[in-house]
Length: 294
Image 1 (cartoon, one colour):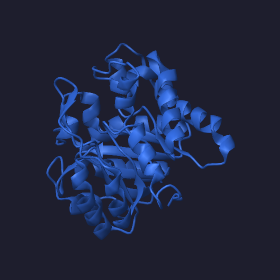
Image 2 (image 1 turned 45 degrees about the horizontal axis):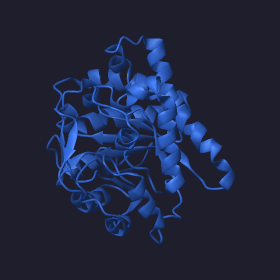
Image 3 (image 1 turned 90 degrees about the vertical axis):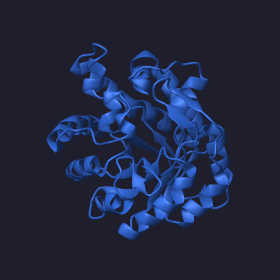
């Protein structure tokens, strides 16, 4: 299936400043119609999956903005309902579209750059206590599946996989990688093995990595299980977490996608700095636009 592109860059292109620790999640409260507009744009150019604005949405994260638990949970559910409403609004054209509830790593809530490093220095119980309530709130809003994404650490993935198997909603598990290792430094063979026996994980792969790292990672994933792959790298530019800016030239190109598909990827799209023009080009590639869900 064709995934959408980056939500943050699409919102920035619409004039929003996201340079705070809530990132796109702040607009769940301040400008939900803008999030809907981005979902509508991506669906309109051919994306078959909308990824919700919940990557950085959590009760502890919202608490730093003075938002109480009840309102925070409402906002987390809203991330799903916004995408569902846009999906249903477009249902008349007969195309199948899905909504994936984004689940970012623990480090995204910390907003200190550790989402790109992993190894947070906390016990598994801390990660369970953080992820379980958010997964349950997102599940209650009725997404088609979870997008468990940009996970930097196989240790965190192991916690998430156990929780996902308890909840029972299909999910993909996507690591952020450098070469053939997670951001935390574990071999990808070990990282993908974490999900091999999972009953809820329907695909494994990578996102928010350099496009050139995707193919080899997918090949490793395929050695660990028969699950389909997922691939949605960023533009290949460099991110400065201090200034919240990207620099350098893009290396994302849709000509890479057929090789990703041949390596087992059934979900292909883009992450940060990949926009509607790129997704439209993906949708025009022969053999990619007519995928069915695994």
